[in-house]
Length: 183
Image: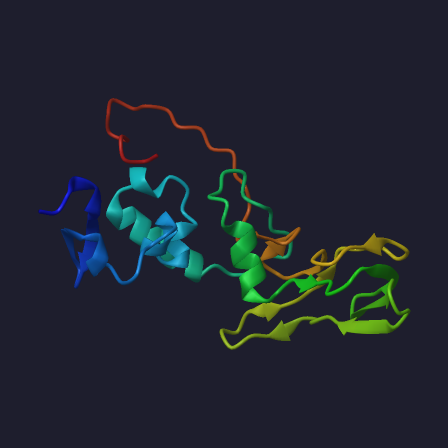
C-alpha cells in the first residue's frame, strides 16, 4: 500500500486532492504563486475579507503615479521584486563611477575597462494608459556604484521598491459596534 509520507495534497482542475507523490508534475514552491501580483502585494491577505482583497488588487492596478510617492510602511516583501521586474528603475549593469547625473541621462565610467556609458532617462512621457512616465536619478555625481544598484527611480518606485501612494496616519474609534468592518 501507499505510505502516509508518499501521499501529498495537490490541485487538479481547480480541485484539491490527496494523491501519490509520483503523480505530481508541477510543485508550487512559494505560497504567493497561488495569487496574482496585485493580491500578493496585500499585507496579511489571509486575514482580509475576499471581496475587499479583490477590490484592493483592482485598485492597485488602477493607481495613478504620484509626483512624490512613498514606500509602504507595512508590506509583503515583494515590493522590491515587483518594481525590478517591471523594468522601470534604471539599474547598473557593472561597477563604475558616476560622471554626471542629469534629469535626462546618467553617464557612467566602468571600473574594469574605462568605457563610458550614457543611460537615457524617461522624462514626462505619456503611457498607453494616459499616465505620466518619468525617471528620477538617485545617484549623485562622483559616486561609486556596484552592479545591480538602482540608478534612477520611476514614477511608482522609491529606492527601487514599489511605491503606489502615500502613507496615511489613521485612527479608528469604536462607535456602538456600527463600524466593525471599517478596519
